[in-house]
Structure formats: structure tokens, C-alpha cells
Image (cartoon, rainbow, N blue to C red; front, top):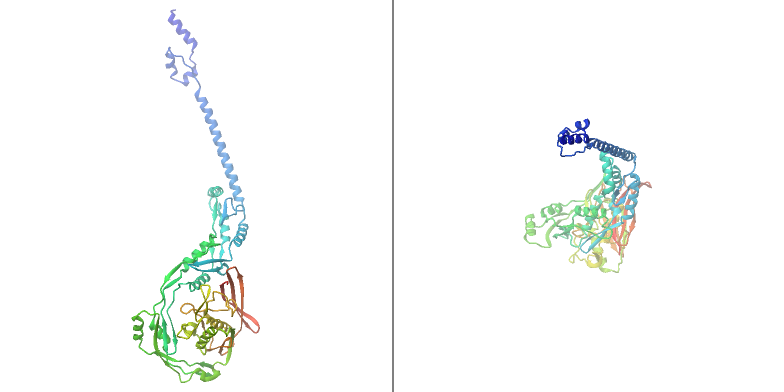
Length: 529
């Protein structure tokens, strides 16, 4: 045997070809054919199988853990009867509370947080509005129910995601705010008449045999809807607690003088007074009235130039038989009376009271007819004889032309209420006057604020007024009816702050000593001195 063959035999002996290795790697034979290389084999497939098995086991375990956790989390949430974690209402954490407990806690918080009144301002003018008079409230019940519904409105997967996101992200619910818009609108309209540069509407009155028409003036009025929204937003965010809310205004033009409308309102033929006994009925006299110039001439007079005041001459046609001529039979019953007291030593103020009272004295209102204080009394001017006397101007007491005549208005107002007549327009003063208590007054401003009432009885009524010796008195005469009631007025303060007084007045109707009705007359806000 040669030396070369001996080496080959030795190599084959050293690296025998295992049958399994041949199956595992078909290239193994090729590798071993190269006698210049030594080879070593490792079983890779077995290790891979082990790794895959471990990974699969871990994955299954993880899925089972997730499913178990999801199931436990779901069961907990389904059984949970309280608000989930991370929920607040108006900044108050209500997590873990029942809806009723959340509402109770929120109601107490808001009751302590909300002030009794809010301040509103326009330029230098500032006043207050009572929250109780606005009937303002937060819808805490709906807010609490909305908080409870978080995590309960979708499928299980959606609910769990919602609960998790709420827990880590937090949710704050703002409850809706509600108020008596009608009542607040009236309040803002009253405030509008008190603005220092409010619009002045054109008006007219009769002085002797002359029709006096006063021009209106452009001015600012409260823009009601935006101001209501500003008030709601300020209260909702609690920013109104210390800072006055700005009143939003808009420029308003006065209505154009409608001469034709005025003509048809005042033009009438004279009517003689008479009455019938069966059935009893009174028909009072009425003066006839007409323009002394033609309607076209009157319109031309108004259109020719811009003036603050226009005078149109009138023709007064008197009836042959006046109401006073038929005696007391026309107004046999005293329906009501009311008196107030004044300082007779203040001659200017006394003069103003007498002038206004004399204009009203003897006025007769037919059933369904409306009385307007400004139209009957007219403008308070120097030419009409009015004097300077103290009045309220933007919260200050100053001398003003016609000062004091609101005492006549307030006295008449109380007599009208006691007669159970229908009040159609009435505004309270800025301050509680000295001659009546809160909510028993009525103020007037010519061209801006009027006092009006309607004869809602079946028969005509007559107003009798006297001002003398420190007493202003009104009597209302007419015919009593079977359904008449005894009238009482109940007025009282409902609250008092450092800047305001709040009050209410009610008309109580009695029949046979028993209360048959109780009607709200007004809710009022006054400034404090």
C-alpha cells in the first residue's frame, strides 16, 4: 500500500460519514469530498423548534392575561353603580359618587358660590340685578346624569376605552344654565330707560287749545339678547362675582312723528253725557277736537324744519251736557282712595304736584280705555309753569324741572291698584321714595317712562285728585259690580345688600273675608343711598 492510500484511509477513519448527517445536509458529501477541509456539524433545526415553542407559550400566556384583565375590568365596570374616575362637574370632582350624591354636592357648591346679585354697567352708569329675580339655575341633574353615562353608552370595548381615557385624561362637564328670559328682558328694558344717553321717543300732549308734539332723540338702548348671553356666560364662568358685566348697547333712532296717526287719535266729535237707569249705564261727555289747520298743513309744518317742539292749533268743541252736569248719579260709588304726604313748605315742589294733579283731576275713562300719565299731564316745561325741585339723576339728587310729580304718579298708582284696575305700564324709582314703601311707587320720565292703566270694569270711572295742605289724595269713582273684591296690597323687602334693596308687591283679592286670588304686582330693585 502506498503512502497516499494510507493517508486517505486515515482521514476516513477520523471523519466517518454518519447516515443521519447525510440526510440533514445533502451537500455534506460534496464538502467531505474536499480532502483539504475539515468540517463540524451542529443540529440548528432542533434549537429553532425550541425557541418557537417558548415564544408561542409566552404569547398564549400574554393573551390569556389580557383577556382575563379585560374580563375583570369589564365585570367591575358593569357592576359599578357610581360615576367613573376622572370626571368633574364645574370643576368639582365627582368620581365615585352616585348621580344623586353628585347633584347634591354640586348644588351646595353653587349655592355657596353664586352671589345674591350681579352688577351691570354702561359707561359711568351702574346698577344691580338680583339673581333670585332672574330665577337663574344650573341644570345639575342633567349634568350628573351625563357624568354617570360616561363609559356606559357603547359596547364593552368602547366603554372600557372611554373609562380608561377618562381616568388618565379627565373630563369636566359644564351644566347648562337657565333663567327667566322674559323677566330678565323686562329688567333690562327698565335699565335701558335709565341709561344716561337713552333714546327719547317723540310724544305729544294737549295744552289748552294747542297740540304740542315733541321730537324724539337718537340714543342708546340695551341690546337685550347679546346682554343676556353676556350675563349667562359671566355667571356660568363665575367671572361676574366681583367685576361688573358690561351692558351691550345699540343705537336706536326714535320713531318718526306720524302726524296722521296723531290726528286720528285726537280728532273726535263732541259727545253729550247721559245715563240710563234700567239697566244702569253712564255715558260721559267728551269734548270734540280737531286740527285748526288741515292735516296736510300740519304734515308740512313737521316736515319743513327739524325742531324740538311743534305746536299745532286745535279747535275744541264742547258738548252741550258734560258729565259733571249729570251729578253724582254717573259715578255713585267710591271704588278706592289713597293719600300720600309732602312738605308744603317746599313751594316749588308743591307747585309741581298741584300742576300735575290739576291735569288729571276729572279725567273720565270709558270701559276698555287706557290712561297715559304723560299724555294727560304733558311735558314738564317752564312754559307749563313747572319749577325746579329735587330729582334723581344717575343716582344723584339734583334740582330738575318738574321735580316731585312722581309723588302724584305713585299716589295714583296705589289708588288704581285698590280699585282693581289693570296696570299696563309701571316702573319703580332708582331709590325707594320717602312717601311710599318699596314696590308701592311709580316713576315717570316724559318721552321715556310712562305710567299707564286700563279701565277693565264694565262702567266708566272718574279720577278725582287734590293736592293741598301737605296731602296728595286720589279718589276713583264709578259703579260697583257684583263680582267686585276687597283689595289689599302686600309689599315687603326680599333682600338687601350693600348696594341694593330688593322687594316684591302682591295684590290680594278677598270676597266675604276669604282670599280668592293673590297676584304679583312687581319685583323691584332699588339702589341704596
